[in-house]
Image (cartoon, rainbow, N blue to C red; front, side):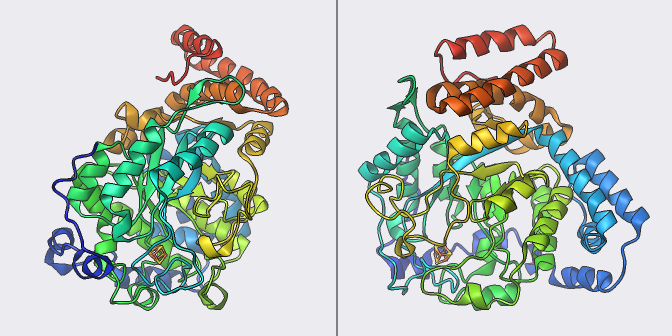
Length: 511
Ligand code: SF4
């Protein structure tokens, strides 16, 4: 059990809303009151590129820098890529470079995960969100530990996911104590796999939750949190104020924007950024993302492990998604992802099942590294799937676009020569934070993970795959093993020893 003796408790929603933010834990990351999201600089960068064609020589220089150093670009360099994205020939060069960067950092792997919604109670009032307090169209609930185990029976036991993103509303009923208990429950719940009966379970719990104080983050670290993901929604302070009422905890822009600084101070060194594209000018958001990454690197030498790209979607009880003047079309969305891939080259890029299958398939060639599938975003949606409509608007945050199952996705990826990785070794053997940053920037992580991807892929094919998927997957494994033999001849026998043990039924072997 996690030690929660040092974290503060709240008597209810009003007490929480009034007292949750710790001012000192904001101020120390904004020395002199200066915010690292420099609005004037963002506006200057946008004005600089307005109506001007990009200089091809400069664009190529920036692409070369991204590819060779894999360091975060300067905002002014990202702005040049934004201008270049309007030129079809230059954009084609950027796309090709984005794919090369992706391959050099992450090889031909795609990591898969599933969202697991733990609750939809929320003290906040975000105007675009169906979970906001005061929306009477939502049926509210918080999963009990027994209900969570029922969800895991499906997610880990039937579908075969090893990695989840656990999602929590912001509310005292889903306090840090609750989050810690749910993480521990996820890790301890093992179930028999359908094809082999091997004991399987969730091996990495990433968390999407509200910003927390340092002491709370230390508790989550102690129970083995994977990535801590907090979506900024919009970096534009004025618009942020319009979307998030000042009376709410989330209305505090500085508390939210400094949350990853607190994570890194607390030792939660795997952090995931996200912007809700469609609320504001995408150029503003991307430039601010780059500034945010650079400030974290300046303080801690660690940047975002992942960037997520949710687009504003219809939600129950709100018209904001239909009325926003900043909604983005598919072509712009592709540009955003390509520019982000080149601007923060080491970061994983997550494109969720909010997107259509066509949109996600296109972005496989644009630098995407992680996707979810067999996803259900209703509270208790996995275990209720067979008994109720699984996409009820009144207990989920938005609607999904890609409903492909994990088995279909694995087969689809294999047909493209892409291996689905179920590897979760990283945080369990200390490859997080600065260590993973180095490994990613030097390209070592991609190679390491290829081996672990093959081992976990073999496990998954045996435990869960349909016959058709297994056949497609085994063909891919053959070529992956041949690649490892060529690349690491001396290490190959050790890889084969683990591979053969996995074939015999041993589980969770990794390097
Ligand atoms: S976006 Fe998050 S914080 Fe805002 S109302 Fe929805 S669940 Fe609550």
